[in-house]
Amino acid sequence: MRRPLLLNGFMATGKTSVGRAVAERLRRPFIDLDARIEQRAGCPIAEIFARSGEAAFRALEREALREILEASPAPAPVVSLGGGALLRREQRLFALDRAVVVTLDASLGECVRRARASNTERPLLAGNAEERAADLLEARRLAYAECHARIPTDGRSIEDLASAVAAIWQRDPLAVAAGERSYSVEIGRNILGARLAELVGTPPRLVLVTDETVHGLHGAAVVRALSPLQPIVVALPPGEEHKHIGSVERIWRAALEGGADRGARVVGFGGGVVTDIAGFAAATYQRGVAWVGVPTTLLAMVDASTGGKTGVDLAQAKNAVGAFWQPSGVLCDVELLTTESPRGFRSALAEVVKTALIGDPELLDLLEADAPTIAAGVSDRTVELVHRSIRVRARTVTPAERKAGRGPPLTP
Image (cartoon, rainbow, N blue to C red; front, side, top):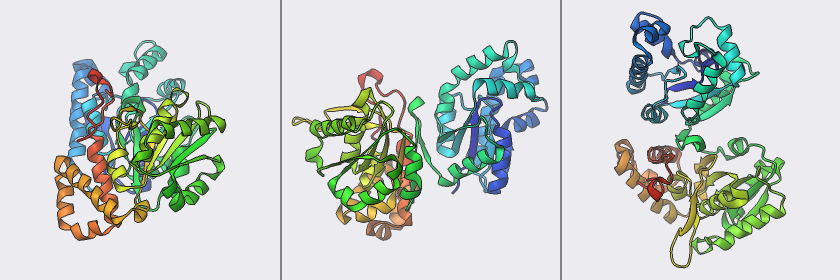
């Protein structure tokens, strides 16, 4: 079932105008949350602020949004939010789970200029508008960072923005809410060629970390997709026995010799061993560079892809050295699983079952109803299995990665 689309962002970033255009493009109903609140209250928002204060308005706002998200109307609507609608983290996490949240960004000066040019009364900008806007934007930074995608709006037309937002919604991404290191996970079939280059971006240098087996199976297609970036390719020997600091050092040296600086990006393309090593190399090279995870096994997709756990083994213990280093994005193309061994695929289904037992009864029903087809290998049903499994795991991730000296509760 399609989820609603929520447009979030600071005041005057164009949420309502873009929302209407997206709704028309997707043939979905449009809801302006502020307008709905005014209709119910029987007065403008400025009057609600004046009579009852901001806290009373926020309560009305939370109630109205939760109603929409819990109703699951069909077709799913496009909703423009007020700038403070997702300030409470509990509300924000609920929205991220039940909807696709896109943050529209604009420069501070542009927001103030647009706000002054509009006819909307904005009680939160009373007094010195520039100072008030700067303070509000700083206070809300986290609320805008935790989303499925962010889109800059300065200098872009409504139609251009609507096209970009609609494309994000159609991909149905998941969000891992990890503060300012939040990221999205895209899941689909045969999407690697179309999506990898955009997800990686245009860093000055790119390091592609894989293993020899995966490189032999899929390396040519990936290198072709990333060819404009001329990636530095590091193909490690496969297997857990190579998950050690020597493999990380090999990546460091290749990156350094290839001229990779702090603006570089790492792609981990392989199973859980590869993504653990690649993520740790990214966390430690030049004191930390961005990385993207592209898992190629079912277990890596439903387990290792979420939460930013990276590291290597020591002789005495597994994962004894590591770091929590969130990727900038994760791409799960289930077509890659067609080259996984049947035994590996079926073994990973145990993790899916465990996840279903913990947090998704409907997933458990699906597994029981269609077990032979699911166990037989990759199908369109696999996309749903991976999507639902990661969705459950994404709920467990918090930005408090080192609270009380421990990592976050990432493993259900």
